[in-house]
Image 1: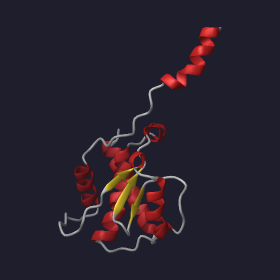
Image 2: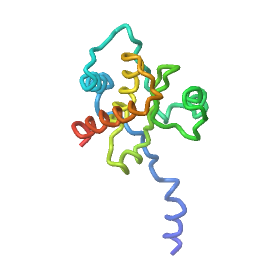
Image 3: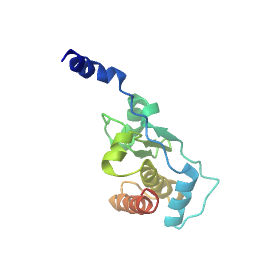
Image 4: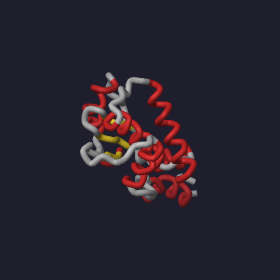
Length: 147
């Protein structure tokens, strides 16, 4: 009985911490696939957004950046493209992707779609139909590459 109690009390101490999720494909490959779906070609004159992962980004930095766009300070880091800073934020919690049967790459495809909509096409991301387009491209990417 004491041995069982010891194991139950100490198990969390010895448990291996969950590693962040990793992209399966290079960012450039994912971007290439998004450009194909959007019938766009690469433009070297348009600055490419840095990708910031939740595990390496402070909540305050995310909130400070995204508040201008969303009009509020989220209480956690989520997948997002910041128009103002031209930055992509990605949730890299591996358990989230395992639980939902997705891969982080399809989330990046979604946010890169918003980047293309804004920086390549000059569209207003407040248009709700653009979210549906990003979801369609994300789902297509997931179906083809995240099995």
